[in-house]
Amino acid sequence: MARSLQSSFVHGKCFPTSETSATAFKRCLFPSFIKCCGGSATQEHAAVGGEMVALARDAVRRSRLPEEILVKSGGNFGRFGGKYVPETLMTSLAHLEAEFYLAMDDAYFREELEAALKDYVGRETPLYFAQSLTNYHKDGNGYGPEIYLKREDLNHGGAHKINNAIAQAMLAKRLGRKSIIAATGAGQHGVATAASCAKLSLDCTIFMGSQDMERQSSNVLLMKLLGAQVKPVDGKFKDATSVAIRAWVENLETSYYLPGTVVGPHPCPTIVSQFQSVIGKETRRQAMQKWRGKPAVLLACVGSGSNAIGLFHEFICDEDVRLIGIDAAGFGLETSKHSASLSKGEVGVYHGAMCYLLQDAEGQIVGTHSTAVG
Ligand SMILES: Cc1ncc(COP(=O)(O)O)c(C=O)c1O
Image 1: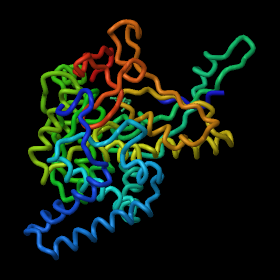
Image 2 (image 1 turned 45 degrees about the horizontal axis):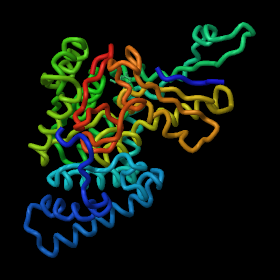
Image 3 (image 1 turned 90 degrees about the horizontal axis):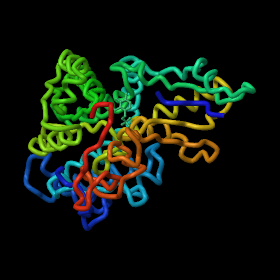
Image 4 (image 1 turned 135 degrees about the vertical axis):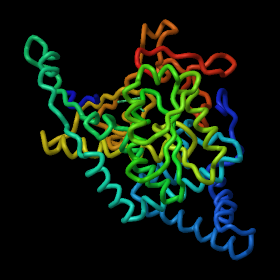
């Protein structure tokens, strides 16, 4: 019985770095920390840098994140994920990774986040019994799935995106960053980021495809009302993302690139999935309260994957729960007019990570079709 439903800069075919992210992490944290101290690489600085590495490692050991994701994989999920980025970004990503582990181990950070999720985002969201939809799917004998909707649309801003945006904006603050850069497709991540920046008094710049801006003008207005600058980019969401990352690379010391989904180089997918996992955790608790059991099937649309992993993450080890992600098939998988990258894609590297891509023989991304924006 189905119990729940859920409402380049480096891309193409594989340019791997020669080291594991664990070694890169160790190697990169030192220069980064020394630079933060504002001096040259004295022995004293190196010692403090070493202490920070040890501290972060200890935080990893003690953090509540699943060990297999953090320690063993180092950002690789089987052949996927990883960190395929230019050398110039390695230090910033290592710094972010360390800060994330330290934050997750910090009771004060966790309390602040919980309070923000409750009082600013409006969690928890209802697990709503969709009576009419349930009736509609009953067969002639009255049998069918009981369908529930996890109402992430009732969060502040109208989507699940703020679960991650608010938490990452808090991380950015911890890192001493003053401005946030993000890209948005449908506009939901842009609104979530703008709302998070408004709460935390951070400057906010959102890049968005110019056609998407027209089609989602109400979200653009909302972002502006929340104090964000919205910058048009020639192209679609993937182009807006490339421009946003470029803008971040130009200001690594002061700005923070806030990814809205589980793409990008390690540690971005790990961070986003951890912050979105609140969806599945609540779902488990609510299912227990409502029918003293678990959902049999979890369904989620996979645009770029954040609401899906947010719902699934909690249930990955539950063999009795089926997890179904749904790709957009457009005019059909046999046509070229779809955006089903998981069903029809090939493995390649995009925006710094190994994933499934719709790409041509040269590893160039091919256009997608979707009635939705982005
Ligand atoms: C409300 C909403 N749900 C889902 C998605 C799909 O994105 P993701 O797969 O990252 O959750 C989007 C993307 O814009 C969205 O706006």
